[in-house]
Image 1 (cartoon, rainbow, N blue to C red):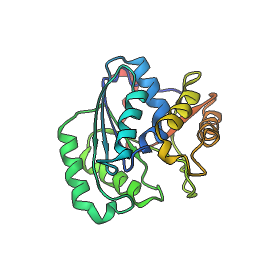
Image 2 (image 1 turned 90 degrees about the vertical axis):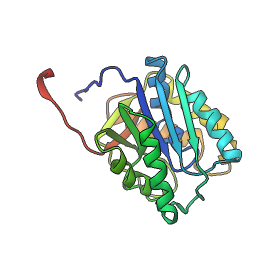
Image 3 (image 1 turned 60 degrees about the vertical axis):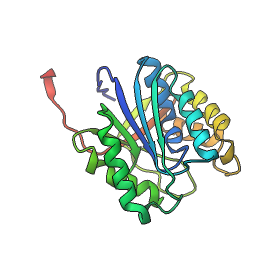
Image 4 (image 1 turned 135 degrees about the vertical axis):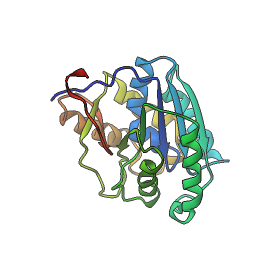
Amino acid sequence: MRELFTGGVDEIAVLGAHCDDIAIGMGGTLLALCSDRPGLRVHALVLSGGGGEREAEERAALDAFCPGASVRVTVLDIPDGRAPAHWQQVKSALHEFRRSCDPAVVFGPHRHDAHQDHRLLAELLPTEFRDHLILGYEIVKWETDTPRPNLFHPLPHGVAETKARLLGKHYPSQATHDWFDDEAFLGLARLRGVQCHSRHAEAFTAEKLSIGFGGR
């Protein structure tokens, strides 16, 4: 499999509909990016969970998943499962968030996620980040909406295990879900690793790409 390299990445944006979406979808990639690029600027926006236990979990988790990075986190209080009914608020929040950063890469949910909150966020991302590389992560859950990704990020040795450990440590409120465990997270990482000749990997769906051949 051919690898394409982005060069140095100094600033990224990560977005989730709920607290834990970002860590589940791309926690390994965050760990790898921050290890490779000390001082990386990470701008995070989460639509729901603000003002309570979930926000506290998210802030602590993103600090752990972004060691050595400069992390700025905004958590809104849009009701879980009701994001489409708050379209205007979501759109306005995205607009303000876009004005606050200029990331090299934008990470968010993918367009075909079965959860309506995830899907709305994925659909609105390109309307604000019009000239950016947008990568849609996958969130393992009970819906049968696992995508067919077209971009793979092989994870360095031990990163997938660290991701699973940090998820269990920092999101105790989710421990009652029967899918929220190390086996699920490592199983998906192993599958994506098989698909790109690596032990573990995270996979993404590219929104739109422009490529220049020959290094011009």
